[in-house]
Amino acid sequence: MKKINIWKFLTIFLLALLVSLVGIYLYKNEFFSRDYELTDELGGNIFPSAILSVAATDAVVIKPVDKFYLGNPKSGFMIRIKSGRTNSKVRISLGATPFFEESVSEFVLTESRTEYLIYPDVIWKYNALKENSQPTPVSVSVDVEMNGKDLGQKVRTYSVRSINECLLAYFDRKFVFHDTGIFFAAYVNEEHPMIDKLLREALNTRLVNRFLGYQINSPSSVEKQVYALWNVLQKRNFKYSSVSTTSLSSNVVFSQRVRTLDDAFESSQVNCVDGSVLFASLLRAINIDPILVRMPGHMFVGYYLDKDHKKKDFLETTMIGDVNLDEFFPEEQLDSTMVGKSQNEMSRITFEKSKEYANKKFDQNLAAINAHRRFYMYLEISKEVRRRIQPIGK
Image (cartoon, rainbow, N blue to C red; front, side, top):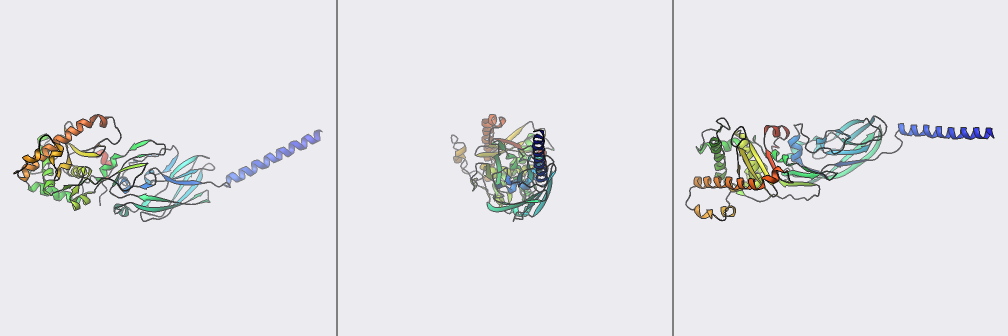
């Protein structure tokens, strides 16, 4: 009886040992196939303006929601994968597209049996991104190896949005809302070549002799400079155009169409956003600190009247163009009073009325702005913002 029990015990022991050894062997050699997923935070959308504006900065506006991630989140693409053994080695090959080159990235997953998000290196073709003027589908292919074992290829179709689409906000994979209105700063381009020409035209009006910014630090000096900019834009006959919608809809991302300065100068058309970023560009160029104020369906521009930022004023830039003032001030019937006025007289009236209208709008929406309600924004185009968001240029 004892011999039978001993043999039974030895049999069970040897079977358990064999199972353990086989398990260790399979674990070390990654015998079990591991799947992965090619994904992103923006629901399959690529925004060139978002990529270009942070390419040369350390800013990460679209942040990972997971604890375990590797690589640079600015790449946009993510590989979701579960690690095998401790210090698993992962190699990711990203195929070439019209918008980026082929690239290979390698990572070490230090934790075993842990789900990671990996951001592979992306070698963007920045000129191709700048020139993309309408939504374009692109197939992105990726190959992944873990500890030398090929996990196969994945292909996913993305939508590369137009350079004119600004990412306003998005819902992440945990359904948390993120405001990304800071990307409007990418369309404020104080270094555009046309800026100097406009400033020269403004000086030729003799409304100001020089653009001094805050050197005199007097509100009246700042107002004169701002009016000179207003006046020269009116002389260029910019027309109001309400085009602002994008061509694609999404339940993940929200975007706004914005004309670049090149588009605005070429077409001589602006809407509330275009006019605001154009005017902010001019203000930045003469060292006056601008503000972009946004609310659902509208935007206007503000500026500080002193270098200490204690006083500020606002402008309704849609009034730069040939607009019906009675729509803004129906009770005053202003259009009838403009008959017989010179261009400069009309310019001064619209400038003052623009400030009156924009300041009233700001006061009406101040509570929502201070409460950071969705799609409300008070964005100073400051040095700090410029360190995070660069102009996208052309």
